[in-house]
Amino acid sequence: MKITVVSPQELGESEKSRWRTLQKASPSLDNPFLSVDFTLAMGRLRDHVRVAVIEDAGEIAGFFPHERHSLGIGKPLGGFLTTCHGLISVSELKIDPRDLLRACKLSAIDFDYLVAGQPTFAPYETDVRPSPVMDLRGGFDAYIDQVRAGSPKNYKTVRYKERKLGREQGELRFEWDSTDAGTLRTIMNWKSDQYQRTGRIDRFAQPWIVRLVEELHSHRSDDFSGVLTMVYAGDTPVAGHFGLRTARTLVGWFPAYDPAFARYSPGITHHLQMAEHAAKAGLHQVDMGKGGREYKEWLKTGALMVAEARIARPSPMATAQWLRRVPVSKLRTVVVDNPTLFRAADRLLKSYGRARSHLQSRFTAKQSPRAR
Image 1: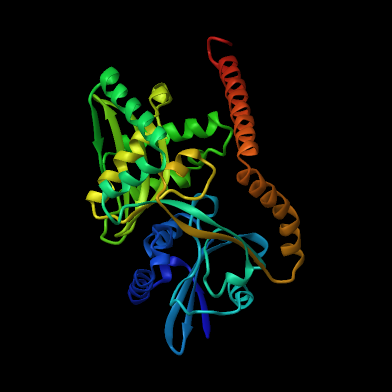
Image 2: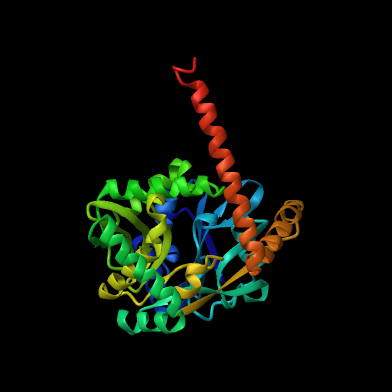
């Protein structure tokens, strides 16, 4: 077994082709965050992105994209920004992960969204749980029949609000795979506002993430593309999403809506219309990602298994990172698993977001020319 670590830009055409072949060969790897195109885009924007190329008997058996930060701390590619991590390899590949870390010059790495059951990492999995998907393999009609049967009250309420939105705000129109940069900017502005209102970290306050999304929005290929969607009431955009797709899977990434239309639940309306158009486009599933949002529970008709795992080599830095991270990770799991605690935490974050926005508004007012 030979492991060579390179930057994404050092991958040759034969290696990229091998990556795509390995990914297509395994349904568990059918996720755009595991695509070589995503790794290449990340590598163009982030200096610490690396790829371990694993060879066995002279043939490439797998790839391990990752980030190498200071003092040997490793992170999955994209870290908190992405929802699928792991090896892109032949299904039977099993190596000592500590040897993999040693070759990558890493002291430790933690996974929150690891493809469950990979032989190399399976012994280190600490928590395995389902990630909800909208299963479209039988077509949209079969999917919606399952949703209606599983949660008839929610379905009836959403369809009522959808009709009400059309009556009161203008006829609804759905746009699939928009190429318009202004539409993308609208989604990012809504999402940034949502992050701030709810006390979350604003991803779009980081310029490299904005550039990444803009670059992926313009990427088009059979195996990997950005997909921008939007629901309009008349000519007014009300809810949309930007995500990534492979030939068969669309992954939820940045759903957002205009809070002025919140009473109509436009985000749910958008998800149902997005699923309908995804099925028409030949996609087999929409991966919504694990998380505590209630809408995912009643929209889901299937699940993929994802795992948390930690791998470390003995070192002071690995120990320090464990002491800092593990208690927070365990607390997060407890909160997510308990609906009462999750709702309380969500309310607390929203209160924090409102207070922060109020303070920022007051500060801005004091700094304005009129105030001076």
